[in-house]
Image (tube, rainbow, N blue to C red; front, top):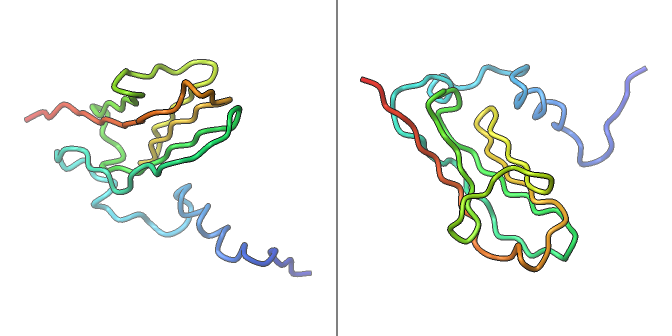
Length: 120
């Protein structure tokens, strides 16, 4: 018996496998640490949220395997620290910030800053 995916889900399994590294090999220029500074491939998008909803900011960067890379998120110029409402993820080139149960005070400018140490 052959199962069929719901309409609009075609390619979803392939995309998940690709993201998990189970599909086709990723381009080597992304995987290798070339000593170049981190570079954003995508940027977080603006959001209009209602109170008590989840804010989700996501971007991609390279290289994905640089152990010297440091990722920091800022809200209105102040460093954000992970906590009960704030979750940060930096894995496989994806950099994510989630703020749960947003309040009016959470409105403002969110920024992601990436730095690294270059060793000769």
